[in-house]
Image (cartoon, rainbow, N blue to C red; front, top):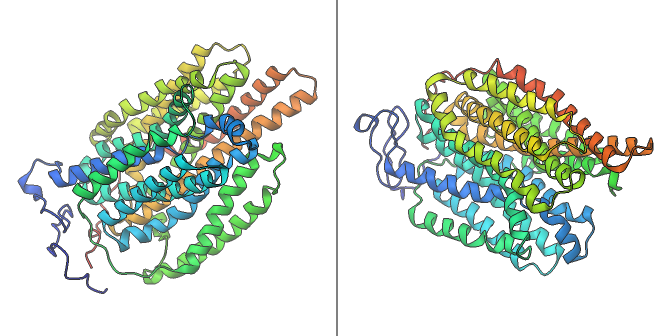
Length: 509
């Protein structure tokens, strides 16, 4: 490989543990600090990334509750309003596969600055948007930054944190990937109850700019990039594959509202594009030039964990969209109250994240995964009994228990998945996770909405009253979710604690 430019701050070879990357102030060696402890520089870098990732991921679900207000204020249809979420997911799906290349080619600080810079710019564009079109552009720019941030966080953690301490840090990451999306509707509902929709962006902008400013001053380079060329055909195939699948799934969820594009058309294009993308990566990875290196799937533990993560994400995103619909439309609650209903579950996830991480570090994944999966499965089956007269307190309890179960699962699955791949493939493992997360979130949303709509329409055609018909559709959606989640229950018994890969740390070039 070509040598890095000589302007590097340090070219020292990392310690065997790989926890003293070059760049910035030198890290303490493992022998100079307590086992598992991180040097101050690394703690600062991870903390900045955690806070920034929480802020950007929060925006993924913030628009759902706002769509009725936007329909009224901007004079658009509900179908058009959904594009504020669809465009965000589409952009994430297209950009995330490229992050494997970006994180190998560029250093930590410039990648962070690009991610937060794009997110801040998109937030400003959305806040100033004179109409719907510019608002969508703002969301796309926001998503471009968001897509980079999460793989950057996970790759950095896997590079800096020793295996024995990763569970604790991954517990904090699980807060970002699970709590932030869950809190989006709550925060959106609270803002819209007292302020204009633009304040959803104006209130976020100072936080993102502060993160950008602090990162500019404090973020240090903790990895060493290597020179590599990006394969343009792979980028195009990736956009067709993941963009087509996400768009098709979103159209599937809106099929009953008379979508202009048949859902099967982008889905077929996406599947064909995915087949071509995978074939090209298998060829390119033989010479180390793949955009997304699929050798991460040679680890059985990684593959099983990713499947379980995908199913869990379907459950999370499907529930996030279905419970507000149920409590607002069937039980008659207002948007703010329905958003607040999701808050205790989100807080439970946040409080449990670090605790679950510490338990993982001591006892491994299975003691957490199996009870968590069984608890989530039980809640899904209980939700197949929801009616138009179900007390709201029972819905609240069900969501809190669901959140507890998912909190028990996310940290072990994340840590086991990424810990099972070779260090030189960390960036690709993170990109695979991010892609799976977006595809699963879109699939969960589309599945739950489609089943609910089709079943409630069928019941209404049989003469069932509106609210009982809608409640019946929601029960059917949760039934499908309960059946699919059985796959995660089975997978939970087969996930193991990662073994040492025996591979060297990510090489310095």
